Image (cartoon, rainbow, N blue to C red; front, side, top):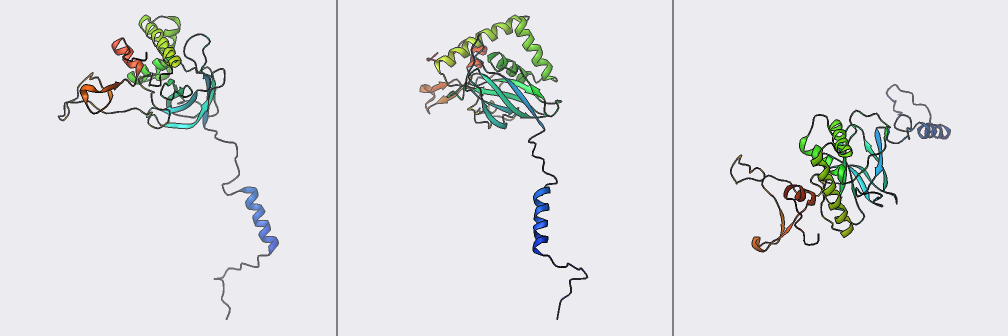
Length: 257
């Protein structure tokens, strides 16, 4: 007895027929037409990494793009001998380009950047990364302005033309501090927001709240320190953000500085 194929006539599939089917699959693919043009929803950012002083590029610095949660988007790129970097980042996101000198993964500097409202394939140049842009990024992080792009340009202009005397002094002192740390190879966090170990995860920082132990009882302006050792009287304090110490207390409490 021969079984019927439920009314369907499948016919006979010959070897030439199989070859024809395979050719169709190879030519048209399984995803509807090939593509192969790469990521067309990304923005290209380029600029120079430097220590903020004249003719001071930082070569072979590792650069990455982190969002506001310090999660990395895209890969890691390296600056060339002139400190120039070129990185591709997603469209429609706020974050920062963070760069660390070679073998100094914690001594990171960064610049705030937003790709919100930009078009796919846009190329942005002149996004330099230095101590001044790090301060601007930290201010934006603290203020959380409604228009961070405009605030960034306002702060950079104030630094450039010297219209904000206090900000200019902070930038000058911070630039000298970073240059000293870079030359002395002090591998600790420089800024207050970007910091981290360069891993592109959560930025390597430590977060939490300070309180007196009761419910809803925060202690405002509490100074938090990261210490080494179990004995608090003989502990060694590690200041993980040098710039924050400078701006808050006017000095850096480090024997190697």
